[in-house]
Image (cartoon, rainbow, N blue to C red; front, side):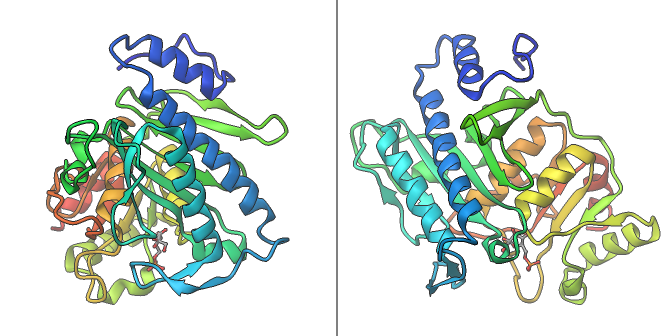
Length: 328
Ligand code: P6P
């Protein structure tokens, strides 16, 4: 893991990417450019979210996404913005997004990367001013450059991600990502329009006393999850669940905790999506010394077999996840 000691807190995202890039001579710069494209889209979404209450782009869009979920206007706005940024950047040959059923081809068949993205997760929270987030996952394509991307480009499995991250639009807007060299976080300074390194080489606590789960569904959960939740109550852990995955994940990453979205009668395979929610957060967790499971295996080892497949998702402090697994 390449230390970022040479990069003081306060360095801009751009300079950080440049220095990381120069430390990896084999890297040709496309991934660096792709990360910049994502950061740019995040700045634009940040502005849209901050204005959402003022401009009529909150509330339902009056259509449903592939999940059969009511699309929020900002969901659609975010999707358009990220697709445009990734298409214009030229590094990406194809995208899958929570907002569309099929693969989106960018016409950049020379692009070396494919991206799986949840442009705005937790968007039902927009109207009530609760934090929401973008989650992204990046793979180097396996199909020949110059040809149209294939389904297999997206079916490489969690351990083949070359980068993953999220943008949390909360009390401040923060971009957190990894390229397999540890996890670093950049806080957005609105007045300068720049992300600045604010959390260097994040290491998540080995243990914690925070559990994040929708206890209203307790009776519906698989038994292993129910047993672990009873364990959390007996130990008087703090329940912290904001109904926005990125917000819950980020707090637990920094403070130590575990997030649970178990399989249930309503969601027999879990609710969260493997390719653009579970895999990227599992990669980040592992890079920060935490871990994840679907109840039986590390999430990164789950075999992908469809673009929008769901998975039970338990992610957080290593000792908490190991304790959970005692009940499965
Ligand atoms: P529930 C939001 O829809 C989301 O995908 C995550 O951000 C969040 O953690 C979860 O679903 C909330 O789901 O069933 O508890 O409302």
